[in-house]
Image (cartoon, rainbow over all chains, first blue to last red; front, side, top):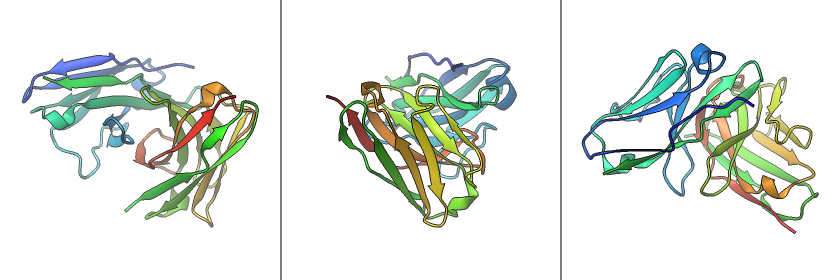
Length: 110
Length: 121
């Protein structure tokens, strides 16, 4: 089963900007984009962005999503302590008819 | 407000069966695809299965194909996961998840709190 690759950990300073990446292949990220989830420890995930980079209401504008080729990115500006969480990307693999998750990135705010 | 409540988890022995249920409210249930996603505590998310709005299309992860069956009852606003021949590696917290479209898209808009399945002898 094809997968999405995320760096296990990213750290950045309070008030700074963090960029998290999600790398797939042309059949996955390149064709349909990736969705993003945030998960704080002990809680269910929260939907951050759809695969076409639309932000649901209630999600801070400090969060943005983009895609370049086979790499999807989540950028968080003005980092706050509450941004410290695990972040997952996901997409639909139409060739396999399955959902694919990245392994997740743990964001640490220094 | 969307509300998803899972039930049916528990401690079972390998090789046995279990049926998970998810009661949905706060939205038009039969307008959206639904999924089961699981997570071993402390580990990442794993998609298990998804079903289209009208029961017409269902998909499974390779790890559960042939053992798990997803279904929904739109009249009861409920989602189900019938799990058979359970293995120790199926131990996880199982989440009921609402998609943003009528067919599976991986836009996981809303999540329940999860129900814990433990498979152990």
